[in-house]
Length: 394
View 1: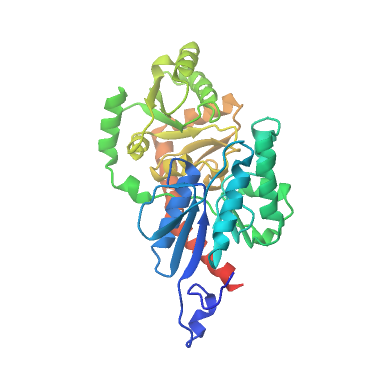
View 2 (view 1 turned 135 degrees about the horizontal axis):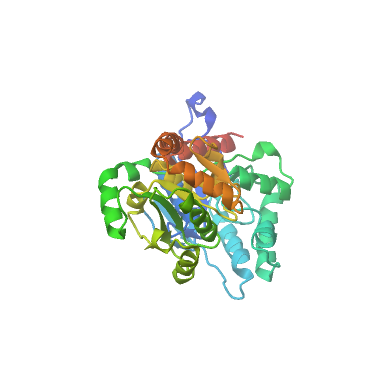
């Protein structure tokens, strides 16, 4: 890959006779700008880098939904049948399309055969299948793991960027990689998307919509997978909390997609049917739901990061999460939230009880917002650009 006379070279300021050119960057991801935490991460980062006139950004994807005209898109085919060829074919076609052009940096967000930078939105595939999902490896899984090993073990990747310390730990356990080549880069958040709303108006409007009193303490649960994120555990903890604080009014607002009938029955059997409200799926404006709530809880079995946690903190919500959520990197126990054992219902209940005190919530809310303000997309993009400079300069 040609890296001479590139605008993002660290030493360009000392080279007066050379005409700097834009740094050409290839971004690789199967779906760009579509629904999903990883997809959003890629778009938010890529759009901000593309806004910098020093970079010429090319995205190699199978599907995309562009947000601006500053990015050039290239179609990468995928063979989906038989299924085991999905990851392999995307990696193969991406490799050949990229080879047709000259890039200073290849930054992939997906398992492909070669890249300079690999942002890991998940954990090693073998670990995910066997340890998290508790499944046996299929042909698709073996194919995906094979591509992953090719990328990591070929010695050409200069930097690995896991999205959390949890992901980093699983990565270095699975592969022997120089720790100097591994840097955690958390997802960011757009604080302005929350600040543009009036909290008091959101509190009145959203609560009125769902029949929640303005004096109720509302725990917010956001997920597209109720079981994985621990909704049943959270309900059990609420049921245990209710008789301990009879004078307090507590509500659980469930937002997202899942088996509502199943969990309505769970709530009824636990005696909290009237305290659980299902808010459905929100296509836009979910920031208002966060702002209308008091506490955020996510008791995931496993989450590589969990962007909803950072979004909650942007709305000044103290959080209750498990130690298997990567966003625990941002949570200081007892300061801006709590890190709990998913199965310890007694402890979870005690933390909910602590949050019922308005002054306790108020103190933690301020600390939660401070952390969110230190993890914006702008700050994260600046970190990645620094890594780009390091890669090109070496």
